[in-house]
Image (tube, rainbow, N blue to C red):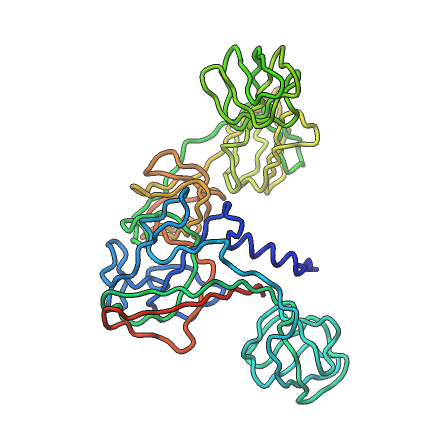
Amino acid sequence: MALLVTDNGEIDSLRNLLNYSQNIPRNLILKLFSTDTYPAESDTPSQTRYYEPYTDNNSIGYGAAPTTGYPQVYNNRTDQDYVQQYGILLNGNRWTIETEPTAVTTVNGDGVSGEYLITVASNTGIKKGDYVTGGSVGTGAYVVDIDGTTLNLSVKNTGGFTAQPLSFGRGRTTAAYPEQTFTFSGAAGNIYGYYLSRANNMPTTIHGVADAATASAATQISKVQVRGTIGNNYLTLAAVSASTAATGTSGEFEISVASTAGVAVNQRVSGTNIAQGARVSGIVGTTVYLTKANAGAVSGNATFQANVSEDLTLGMRVSQTATPNGIDANTIITGIDEETEDTDGTVRVYLNNALIENIQASNGNDTVLFDYSKVTANGHGLVVGDAVYIDQGTGNTTTTSGTYVVHTVPDVNTFTTTKALDGTGALTLYDAIFFAERFTNGPYAIQNAGDQIKVTLNVSLD
């Protein structure tokens, strides 16, 4: 059965979705769409859906700056740059998020005893997840599905009823944002609605431009001293550490080391009087800065524990060339535990297929290979943590289209994703659509300089 999300859990979920705490994930950008689109849960961005009003004739205009006065994003965060995007950047902590303590709407409805279905006079204002009270609706019933005026409830009706007032909406968790105004400097055609996408800084030369990116095989990752037992669905990566003489003063956030070979930011550090759980926050010469103050005078050796899985991610293809081959065909990574129960620095990598042979040094097959694809898009503007929608380009039938998060950025023209991208060939990159709504009384025609569209945002969990 599905987990119950409490009201507090719904509030916290919306806070995370909307970046209420001003941490990763990114803020959202409010965008308009000039396509005749009725939003559906299965929607994805494409060359024919959800393009923005860059031109005045309701045609896709990606590849060049808008001619309509559709606004370029100005930043309300000093640490994130989105000036190559268009729309209105929202400030995560300006959302008002609360759970409705009383009914939102009341409408007459009919029901049959023992059935999960009810019929209402109108479904206006009713959303999936709304609690329902009234008539002989069962205790704790909420709306599971809406099919016109027929509603599917979570529990059976306790009796039959006709034209009884039913209340909906209590317990609905909603986020609201202050009204935002788009002012145009020229004709922009018909505007059908708006959507919210996760902020990123893709330039107009890439965003929404067909085949502006390509997928190709990235450098294969090889891990040695890997262990695995036949029948298990995981591998164990060997611990990698560097040990060097260190000194430090009690209460200070730094130590001096004899060598920084093998030392990197975010590695765990242990040693005499080094605080438990301390990590490397910076390296300057032979001085290593820590995230926690020393518990006493540091002496002896400091051990730096490498994160041996930091270059791995979900979806990577796993294989071996050794004999015996312990990896089944079409095996991918499904999970990574950086802290195993042994707490010895080893890492457990979970797989979608069970191992078909033991993997160990005595078998001569303790090297495991990991493959994935990278994206090349000149001047992509993306940083680690950005969410983008990657679509198959012309002739590409091997890449799985979907929303991906940027995993690494080797240079200004390439990036990798999590889960790992597959396939090769042309790609088209879009903003990832999180929420969308069509104007109820639209479309609204933008014909003259100074024409405006005002949007008040309300997001509900259903």
